[in-house]
Image (cartoon, rainbow, N blue to C red; front, side, top):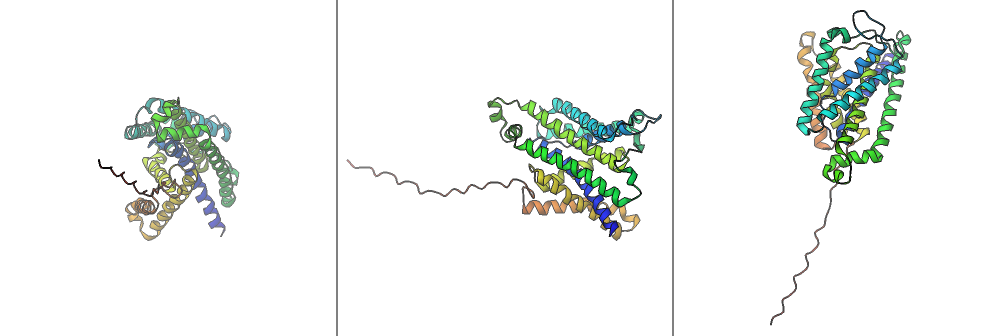
Length: 326
């Protein structure tokens, strides 16, 4: 029973970290309509920034300032937000698929830097010995997992409340107006580029914070943690939960991660070690089947805005006036 509770806490902690990434994507795409497929790069920026600020000094690489974990998280948000703002300034003149290609290129560049800048990032070996918020409880897995769950839950809840407030504020209404009809919003004196850069920067800062939380939760990071499959997972979480809904972002993250982790555990039981590589593809198949089923039932996702159906009754056309004969 204790092991089951500990695993449940570990599972929810991971799911809530994914929820934080999905909340950042929902601000960019669901609220503003910015097609970002390079989110793995911003998660990596946050993870490496916090790790470099908080780890002990290492003569083999730069960094290692041994700052408090909270400073590492704040630093991750600042660097991630600045990186997203610079990316936004350079790319937000692009639209739809062109913006997607550019942001994907940014993520690839970040991963290649993490892989090759060995003096800074540790290269393919990554960065270890990242301090954990409750490292002293590591010998008691149940307390350790519950403590991590508590702190990740508080951070995710704070981000959720802040984004809910922002989405209902005048700033959020401008973002929605730009998403729905950019020309109409510009005609009212709103700067599309200015607001989009802000949304992109805030979303990037939230993703970077999620990367920092994950780094300190696991205690180790490497470039392989930020492959494009991460972007695929988060996009599926947002689509299933409902684009434009912060509640949907959280619910979709928990649901998709449950299926991802459950299918992984099932394949490890049903298949031998030699078949594991082939069986791992079943995880993506399971996610794809679930995506099709839910979107067939609810095209807007579990908590997305349902399309309004305007039921207009056909009024009888007035009879043409009789022409009076001569």
